[in-house]
Length: 359
Image (cartoon, rainbow, N blue to C red; front, side, top):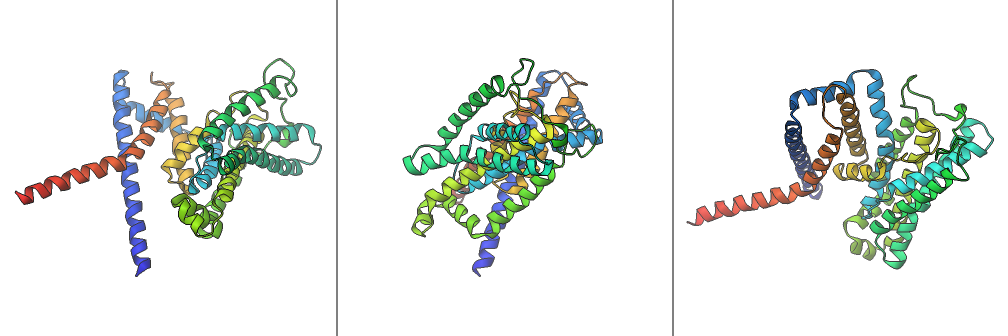
């Protein structure tokens, strides 16, 4: 009896979330149409160009995968931290730390490629994890806000890496970037001439692992319990401070690994602006995905499709690429406020109905 009630509640909750998401997307489309009309363009032509641009060739589809790879990786870690009630806004800083530590391994360790890859993965996970774990440790011991700490750690990482790539690790030529990795260390490409690489398979395995851990293990149950009710979790004997710190370490570890994957799969060096605000984008995707691993994959692919499509669309029509930012911002904003809007709207209708019945 209890299981059937629980299943019914879960189905109703899922339906409500889907309705909220669809309404949020609809609102984003309406605002985007207004935005496009204000620029003097035909919205139907613009959306058609975006679709054609995203799927016009195999290389375009592979570019979508390439752009989605780091966002998915960081987003998976954010799902873990968010399940425990922790907010990680330090993905970019953790990404930088993973990238710079992994490129040092590639540049200065002499070993077969597979060994270097494994060492670089381990080092990037530790570097990013420590960078995220610091915020969790300060939260659990001093009661500081992990939101503020993770944001501040972004700037520390940015300036630290900026110093390293402009001084001791700078490549010859005066450009702020490290030397390039040897070609034998590059991740193999899915197709010659594309940026997509086999690192996407590692990300797919991680997504399956995160989904399994969060839904089928005691560890995942404990994290979810902390996220839902910290007081109840503590009363039940769960070490809330310890697990909260671990969740932020895991989030940082995923972001650090994303840095390693981008370095070895796409850029082959560390340079300024390598993150492209992956961290904040991943937070947005995780919110829309309700901290579900496969939802993060779907959301990241959708956003990357928009980005690739808009970049190609600019060749045909005079619409700025900022339309992607407009769409994604409106979707997130609408998704966050839609439950309250629907609740107030439903409450108002019920109140009017009751008033009519009492007349």
